[in-house]
Length: 262
Figure 1 (tube, rainbow, N blue to C red):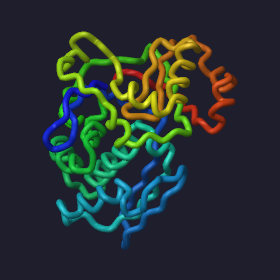
Figure 2: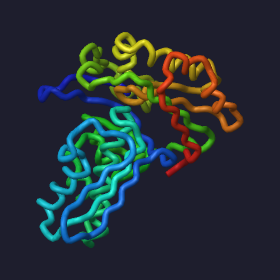
Figure 3: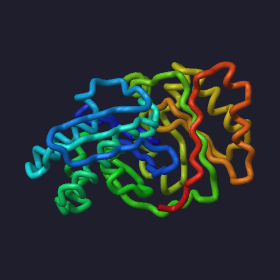
């Protein structure tokens, strides 16, 4: 994640790579009903129900396409909230995809992207759901060829919570670095410099993963999850027994064995 410049509208221009993962996912079931119903299960979501991106997506789609009727939604949250993994944005995008199919809207990919764009900068990515180079505020997408099937993914979500405000608070922009992410394959996360100072345990987790044999490790987005790539023969599951978890006993360890080209 390169943070290139601060924009006049207060947002920042970024360069990053989005890659879809499948092994760790929320569950969303949408069925037609005679009245609107929303049932949430699984992990707690740190917002009011009416602020949930799934409901906001339903309301936006219904305002754009009045033929959408009431639905019964069952939502099970498995991706940790505020983890920097795009869980909420993915939920919103897949709600739009479900409504498109359920009510036979026959919307194009471009129309679906335009519908979800106001809900979050990374929502359009989850409509495409394939590896992309992202620019702008993260919503200008260029599909790329990327195959990570030679690796296994480990993600650790610590107890620490990182707000977007504090992540951007001490960021140093790198306007001169524009274009280096793909051209020079400089895969760094500019948020780490700020976030690691405020949350040193996250830095410890990254070091822990590298010491455990990870070929690459980084914080995901503005945090707080740290992910690492291991080769297929690595004994990375032994991570659960290592000393890190004397420090972070409630850290969540997430595995994804389904990485590959989408």
